[in-house]
Image (cartoon, rainbow, N blue to C red; front, top):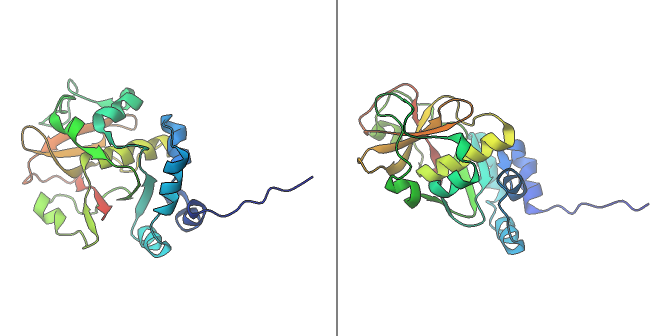
Length: 212
């Protein structure tokens, strides 16, 4: 009987650093039914951040998630599993949920490649947009709405519980009413997308940040 020898791959090495805080294309494909080509898998392996950057991610509470095979909008993600999205007709504070026909739903996109996003959220609540942005380091930026939704969806599907807890995460996108788009788990089963002005303060409104 011959033994199968597993040759280490870049993803295998990255898993050794991040453990469950790295979600590779195989896991993404399993929970979304999306298909990666051999070229796409190779491109992801070749574009993994260096180990030093992965160690930074581990030390700073980041999760690294494979992006989709092709760029996806929030509208596209709805087609994967519409049941996890909460839209108009359900209350969420004073603003309510945004409509699925809002422009950012189709314009904001998560790209192929790797997405390094803070696991959960920034720790600073009850602050305005400007006050929260000031806490980001020079290697971080605010996540787009699509990046935040992708991370919430994939992490939730892989592990069965929310990445962000019961908070709403500010993103860099704005809705048609010119308010900032906020993304978060409405409950443990559905993702809610709301809006709020930049001056808005609330303890459970945080900020979603990604690695540049």
